[in-house]
Length: 150
Image 1: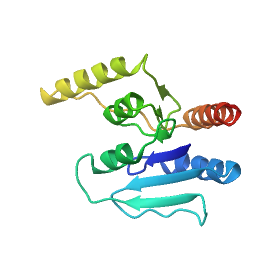
Image 2: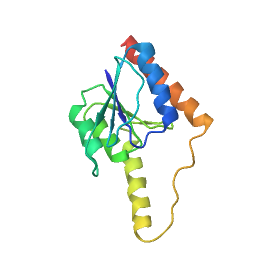
Image 3: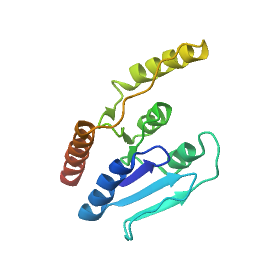
């Protein structure tokens, strides 16, 4: 299993949790972004820089994904693509996108996009708080533990 990180929008605190997990469990992890990112020196962690552009990083992750890989992303269309291809998708707030919930997430995203297109201010998610970070770390740990046992 490989961990892929949609890294342009991934909060630094979440990346730190991922860096520690990759080192502790000796898991390959790749951050994909359109700008250079600092990563700790590690034989398990690498960074791939892609050109700027809409969905370039998403497309690179989808192209390299193998069945069973884990992708960290808040991008719902990317998560839907990952799930359809047999991968796992976890957002930085600790919620797994699944075959059972992805349609609802896509529908809500499309609805909010339509509202914004008509001039309605919908706001965005609040800042990541300690509870979100803990929930993410717990979900990641449970998932990686299950994968190690499989």
